[in-house]
Length: 489
Image 1 (cartoon, one colour):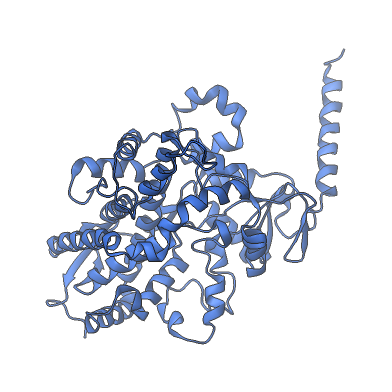
Image 2 (cartoon, rainbow, N blue to C red):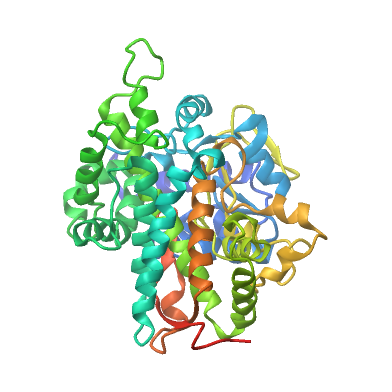
């Protein structure tokens, strides 16, 4: 019979042989990596679903070197040459993979979720000038960040006897800063207003990693069983944020420096090839807001936690000394503050994970290996920042002093991948740096931070999200000791 046990067994063996033959014939067969990665992506998927992909990929690089095959059709690289090729060749590097479909908002593609370089370039031309450093440091724009930093520091002063959960407060600060830049005067006041804090908390507490991974890797299964999956896996639901953004983007006369002002300009002419409708504007704004909350908030949280450790007390003292001795120096002209931020971004990049790209037609030669077209290639900042001892000696050690030496400065800057690389790098880099430096200057000019005794290293372990990472415990309790009472000299 057609479906006799013997026939089924023979068919199964034939399929296995055919699959193995394809794997062996692949140009990727000889690439370094564990044997199972040549045959199945299951090890990678397991770590993705357990929020440990970043550390898993890094462990493979430590074992196999700068080029590792992490799945049958996926290769990870850490060398500068590979980063430049994948993300910077021809200006914007390779096209993005279908992974970025997960980041569509209101069923629309944003600048971040566009796959092809051409589409990205069109959207970036509309947006980029609002994130230029010259726009970020305009008094009307910068004053919003300064105002939020002062409020944050005021609240620190209320926690000299009790601990403060800076994980929540830093994300509230980031939310208020980014919405100021997006929508002023219609931004949030999460640091003081419960309604806005609830909205921010809904974004940062999102736990939809597994649901979204199923949606990406098994789209047909997800299409038919999404309702059932929602009973076991948390879906992404942010109605408060969606309602806020839809309301904010419908307002008129936003400040000239804001992104909303620029986006609304593109609704005026029906003949414009770059015209945006109200849904496009809301989608783009929502994407920027969520990214601005999580990335800056998480990076600041990890950095302040590290600065508060006994092993970093020396660095905290030097930072305080520079700030207090230079009260009239601009936040972006303080060399030790810059060193602390750079080292923070090296050790705790806002997006530590792989940024997948697709090899174009004909295949590419990357770091000495031929990679066929259609393959997924990527680099992850966590490993790029740790896989070259010559550039970053003792890479697992937090040491801002490395950035104070002129020797090797060019190489350090070349190997920094915290904001990605090339034309599709993080457009909000200057805004993020301004938020980080202004707040750290104001905090460490007034306080010493120490961890609460209830905090553990495990609770602050980096825990992967869809593309960013946050502390496992989603909590970071610190004490703020006024310098007048607790001088460190």
